Length: 108
Length: 339
Image (cartoon, rainbow over all chains, first blue to last red; front, side, top):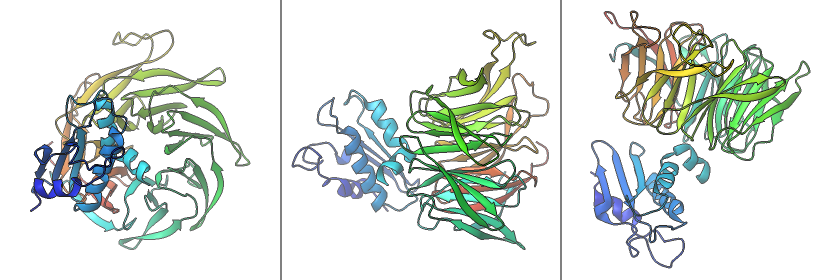
């Protein structure tokens, strides 16, 4: 069954859009911030932008979401959000990432 | 509660893609579906099976998000992420794109025909709602651009008998519009939902409006006219809308669609938890504070999110649904005994 380590392995090497480093190297993603329930088919990933006003937060969240959408079985419900308290616009960013219509249009 | 909703048929309507929306024609004989494969498909029965009678391709460059039939049943409108709305004219089993409505700055999220057949409304991520007039020569003209919402507008629906328009938005509100002295105005804003409002449905009488949201609730709103008996305050000659019922605790994820059966008054919902639910108003409930009971709950109605539910306008209990898994399903709903 799919566990947190497996999810983390999918996202750890995603490149940060602004720095020549991976999301893992920048501590944007950490295995401890990945929650999985295989029987319930749910995955939740909290990511921590490098600075509270990071303008790339939505883009980073989207790249995590895309990686999961393309790698996991379709039964999984995915929630990608900002680690609470780590970004000035976390509600607005989280809302966009949770809107599957907006995500679909952005990716098309 | 599982037995109140029985599967009749399942079709792979938009393979390798998601099916976003469904619309029955006014006669109840055809079902239009649309999806991420940029196509619209028309389904009809052949004996006991549902078969695809037409495929409308070459209309859009991107996802088709919603479809809507004209009240006469001869036209179909399709709203797309490519920022256009196509108007298709039906000629037996063939559909020809007769006009393409342009103007929105980005994805068109919804299209709806007014009951008169002379007006069309569209809405978009550009935050606006457009009202279009169509004349006898099938010429379309935009007569109003309404910029009342502060965010992406997800859905528009017309009142069943009056020229009244409602819109639902990412800004968590529902807005109502009507024509006043040759111009369209927003005359009411319904607040209460705590997140994006995805869809709307009027009840058969048009006195109540149901809305569904990412906040996992369905809200029922009622219109109160000036000088109403209940003493609900109105400003001037404008009707006032109040939330008279909230259905919470039933849905575990975003509710993408709500459909109010015009024949029976049953309310169906399409949810991101893959389930379909039906609610019915308790017969003894107070019209000003109605109570609704859950009469059907079908988990795993689809293998992924349910995006749309649509009641057949002529055949009681016939419900269609579609999903991110690309399938369309047909169901028979029967209100359970003793509820």
